[in-house]
Amino acid sequence: MAKWITLLAVAAFIGLFVYIFGFYVKSTDAYSCALAESRRNPVVIRELGEPIEPGLFAWSKSYSQEGSVTNASFGTNLTGPKGKGWLRVIWYRSPIGSAMQLELEKGSQIHMVYQGTIPCR
View (spheres, rainbow, N blue to C red):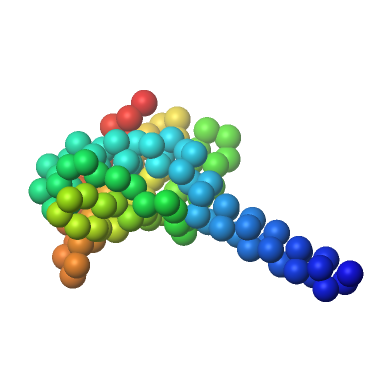
């Protein structure tokens, strides 16, 4: 019986870890905005083709939301007819300003996709 409880506890811990670091970010405005901006960006379209599909996970390096201030750093795979790439996202939003940076890594090249204020509302 103790063996099953230990196994269940380990499985729950792994499940929580995967949710927090792999799925949680996908439910945020930062992820939705980054994906929308990537899908319409000429650099991403040139490198990956259309349609552009996100990977199953969005791996979070950091994510914090305190009041109306959100600070996030994460990455996800993007796939299109021309291949795969890794999208890195840095996101900051507060009542006094915002910033977003998107980079696409494909092969050994890194392409700046977007850098500026957050374009989504």
